[in-house]
Length: 534
Image (cartoon, rainbow, N blue to C red):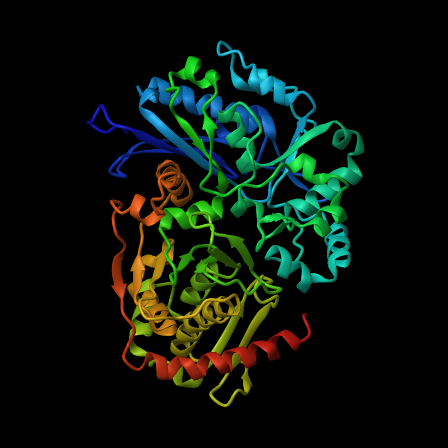
């Protein structure tokens, strides 16, 4: 879709996600004037991916072909050109990549990037530029030994979390690099640069190796999140002289340089178009949501995700703390909960006759605090906390085998949001005057669910309609990156964007009901964690 206006500057935001490559263009008023995408499975079938990835025989190793991402960029820009998109108006671009994926550039690739022939497709020019053809991605869980080695080298999981913001996770890039070095030593020997998916994508536009930004870099188990430099003890545990392969990290708002002549000559980009550092998809989503200090964002989808803007991190053995992508002095925290909408749907079917209307009516008709009944509903092994099964407790903290349908519905929703608040507070979040909860995702359309969310957090809930938050956030970051050079804050740069809509405010008695209930929930969670797993 194209806007009627044919002049004025444009800003591009790309998102190299797991299943597709997306782009959004916004104008100076932050109105979306163009968007498009390339689906990897259907539009690039020669790479034989399913869901954008290859799942290997061991079911643990998951990779994506690097050249698929490059060819997708060729295809996407060709689509834009055919649609009449005017690349000469673009003065800034940025992007995001699926977090934790890594790309291994073969020796000599740097020179290839600097001498690209504008008469040829990029994927032809770069077909021999990668020492590892299939990149490990975030779905990979094959690096258990490497995680143990890294934690042992730095003094345990809690010490690693204090340094890098997270304990060792199998998908995190440092552990993936250690595995590549061990299992593919010849390929590793021929590597001259290691990029994240985000900095790899930025390199394509820059015509040179792009720096890893602070925010995406803090999802590697390698970056000291306080000094914002590589941790020597972590680097040494992974590989000797690893800093040479990674390059120095830079602030997420950094302008890396202009687009290479390849893009100017092939697609008509302006020579004044600047490339702002790319970041991870989660940090880019924080920018797209325009989360502010004290805010919390709750995405209610298949999995529930909680984003937090925090000033002082308190890294723990659960969740993740990243450097903030729009304010280098701040941090963002992220929590992911597997048991989200699918669990809500199961209880809807079981206790509300499969009807969302009945489910919502039950929430309206049952009292805040649910008479003291509390439920833990972990249909699959949860990430935070690491527990499984359904665990129900009455008002006297006695474990029971079942609850009435009406009580079960509220126990589910209250329990989910008590969990979100409890674990957010453990990462450094605190409710202060002016705190907003920003809700997105499928369940954010249910006003009764949002009312419980508002009550449990004792804060107003606003809804945001962002289907492409990472992509849009990347376009916002492109605009801000240019403005930041003159000292303009992110929020001043994007103040023209549409505001979230107020959806719910807390009941006057919410605080007195849920403050003690939260303490009970924390104690009961400890009991659940001590139960044997069946």
